Each structure stands twice: as C-alpha cells, then as structure tokens.
Length: 384
Image 1 (cartoon, rainbow, N blue to C red):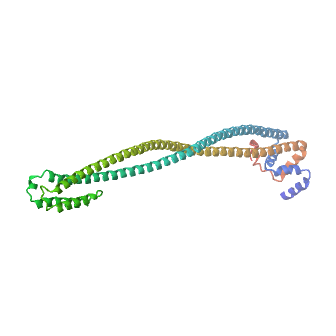
Image 2 (cartoon, rainbow, N blue to C red):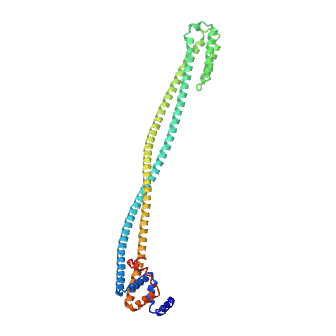
Image 3 (tube, rainbow, N blue to C red):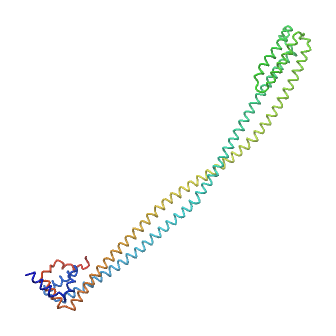
C-alpha cells in the first residue's frame, strides 16, 4: 500500500513539485520542511511557519553581521599584530646589519694589527739574534785579549826573572860554578820556550826564548862574571820587555776601542729592543681589545640572528593563524549564506504557492518521509 501511495505522489507532483522536492534534497531544507509538516500536524496556523522562517532568516543575517564584525576586528588585529611583528623583525635585521658592519671594520683592522705585530716580532727576533751575535763576538774578543795579556804577562815574567839572574846575582845563583850558572839560564829559557809553544796567539815567544837559550848555551865557556854575553842578554831582555810593554799597551788600546764599539752597538740594539717591546705591547693590547670586541659583536650577532629567526617564525605563524581564520570565516559565511538563501527561497515558494506547498507536505507525510528528528535544528539554524 505504501509503495502504491509513493507512486501516486511521484506521478502527481512530477512537474509542479520539482522546486519543493529540490528543497527536500538539501539536509537543512528537509529540516525546514519537517518543521512545516510538524506545524501542520499540530494544527497551528501556517502563518506561524512563515513567522518562524522570517525570524530564522533574520537570525541568520544577524549572526552573519556579528560574525562579519568579529572577523573584521580579528583581521584588523591580525594586520596590526603582523605590522608590529614585521617592524620588530625589521629592527632586529637592521641591528644585525649594523653589527655585521662593525665586524667588517674590526676584522680587517685586527688582521692589519696582527700583520704589524708579526713584522715587529720578526724584527725583534732578528735584532735579538744580532745582539746575541754581537755579545758572542765580544766574548770571543775578550777571551782573546785575556789570552794575549796572559801570554804577555808570562813572557814578561820569564824575561824579568832572567834579567834578575844577571843583575841581582842572588847568593844561591853566585854559589853555582860558571858552567852551572850558564846551564841554569839555558834550561830556564828552554823550559819557557816549551811553555810558549802552547800559546794560542803569541807563539813567536817560543822561538825568541829558544834563541836566548842558544845564546846562553854558546856562552858556557865564558866567565859568567865578566862575560860580554851577559850584557848582550841583559840588553835583549830590556828590549823585549819594552816591546812587550808596547805590544800590551796597543792590545789594551785596541781592546778598549772594541769595548767602546761594543757598548755603542749594544746600546743601539737595547734601544731598538726596548722600542720594539713597547710597540709589541701596545699592538698586543690593541689586538686583545679587538679580539674582545669582535667576540662580543659575534655573540651579539648570533643572539640577534636567533631573535630575528624566532620573530620571523612568530610573524609567519601569526599570518598562518590569520589566513586560516579568514578561510574558516569564508567557509562559514558561504554556508550561512546558502542557508539564508534557502530559507528565503522556501519563504518565497511557500508564500507564492501555499496551496501546492501544503499539499506537497501532506503527501510527503503520507509517504512517511517525516521523521521529526530534525525539528530542534531550528533552535540553532547555523549548525552544519
């Protein structure tokens, strides 16, 4: 029987009920028709349904207005928030540029100062080497001079000793016989000649002592007290003592000249080193100061870059929130507008074709299409 009724409805309203059937195919439209069917089943005036529909349309429009206002306020706040965030990002970025500009000045300056310090240090090392060479040379000269003095003094001692043998004629020497006296003189010169062979500088003294020994040896047959060889040897000794004294004086003068030159050159090196050490101290202090400033600027740059990245992320996130909110707002607005248009269409269709609409609703109810479960929807018409 139900199938037969449905067939009759389908045949009866195949053309003039197409518009009503289109409303029924929409979930919200079906809910509105269910409401109309409920009104008709309770016997309430149909005008009450029109009133409910108009109130619903007004409610939808008012909700949209409130939503539009809230969205405008929200988007305006978004614009303001993003503007503030972008300004903060711009300030941070400007600060990073300033810091990088400072680094671009400090780092080349630091390299320049380091180059100066390296050059000064190389000069210092070279100066210290020259000074060390000078000191070493001076030590060699001093050692050589001391050796010359030592050899001169030994030769002086030998000659003066022999000189006294002939001039003082000590009691022990006079007690010796003639041959023994000459032998002692000869042996003394031979021994001195052997010692002089070990000299590093005045090796000629060995030959001189050897000549004196030969002279003494050739005079052994002479009477020691009255020998002419004695005067010859004494004169030779006096001559040699004078020559040794003159030589020693010349060596001493030359040594003093070398010492004066050394002191002058050493003084110049000492001044240079003092100046270099002072310059290096200033350069190293400047480099240390630059290192500290560079380190501080790099630390600040790292901090500002991190803050800039975080601020950009915050701005992007805020922009994403605002775009998502705008997208959801647009979807809601479109759905609400569809519902409002549907309500308006139903009101128009019902007002223009009240008898056909009422007949469609009755036939629909007879077919068992009314379920009643969506009646409460009208209390919140904007729900999906």
